[in-house]
Length: 242
Image (tube, rainbow, N blue to C red; front, side):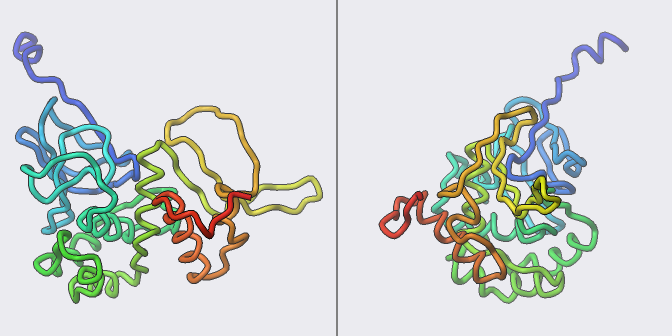
């Protein structure tokens, strides 16, 4: 028995750096299940992992540390993450919009209610559609109408992916206590990997709400996200770092 166990292939685990994505269905040639409370899937080395929410295929990638940008509809199309692909943007907007918090600080948790609602609309959802067509799709609108959730913007989804790819997580509206028993609200950008890190305080491009100063409503949030996306897309003519 011990000899047999020693010959069993060793399992590896992977997770989404833009998560955790908890409760996401996954399947490989040797394993299947749901991502655990840490957002991990399990596979044998070199296996392709296919992810799903209920009856809706989310995409596939070689097992490892991923972001949603690494997933593709077809195994034959696997390649490097590309934040400009409509497929990437659509997939990220859809999955991120299942989260409770705006800043995704606790990732996305998928339960039976979400699986059932997504499954009812799965036949009408295609991540490879044009971005405008996808967001106006009756199936996509139906999912988030039933969930009562806001469908995230293009720039918002892309910014979250970009930060995750560089190992950064953003927390919005963090309360920072002051010595006069008041507080400041801060945007905190910190490494995804656990550990102790030095802190840099500033008001600038990576400062409060990307030069908005404060986000009071959805319009402010959209402006901030568009400015951040424009900066990293190279359109900086109207954006000043200080």
